[in-house]
Amino acid sequence: MSKELFENQSTKEVQNNFFEELAGDELNGTFAFGRAMKFDKSEKTLVLFQYDNHIIGLAKLVDIYQYKDGECENYTGEYQFEEVQTISEPVTRQEISSIWNKIERFGQAKPYLEPEKFPDFLDLIKCRVDSIKELV
Image (cartoon, rainbow, N blue to C red; front, side):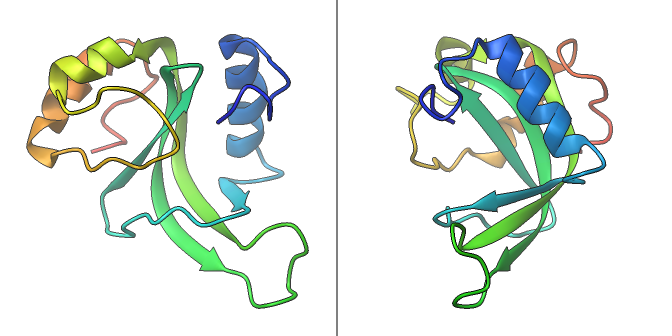
């Protein structure tokens, strides 16, 4: 999620606008994408949203739909999310690196995060999201 895309909004503004819209009735967890990021559509895929070098939200990925040629002019498909949540105190890269030490910086690439360290991440964010039990 780039600052240019969100016109240099603050982290709180992006959380309030993007995540409320994504979780709201109009989008109902659907996020259209211009170019596909390769997500493993397994039963337990958790997507972390980063903005301005912080993890600011997360959601469970439940489905991926690829548009047919010509179906949509500006997008190539959409992700369907459940349990869309903002993180009240965004997680820094340093905090993530203390769990997954191979994370040196945030960027567009999707790193593989070892699942066995996920409980440490949940401990880190448990006071920062509405409901952890829905995520696991």
